[in-house]
Length: 84
Image 1 (tube, one colour):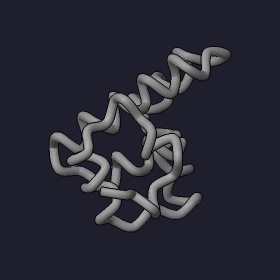
Image 2: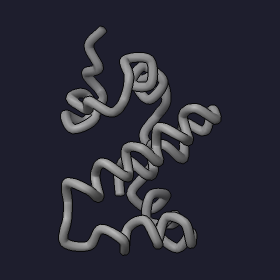
Image 3: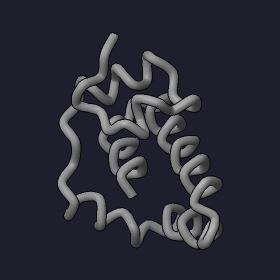
């Protein structure tokens, strides 16, 4: 299935399954403002700070965090984490 509305980095992610990508594709993307609001969440802030200067590891860990949100049915939070 083609995920035309998904950003390329999500469509080509080896971390996210097709089913997880379909979950994301079926849900509207949050606004930039909504994404910015989660930066103050302690868990998210720690994750972002842990990988300063290492974009590959940061991206991998954000995708893994999004995967855990998807497993718990929290597609909105998964979107926000992926768009950080």
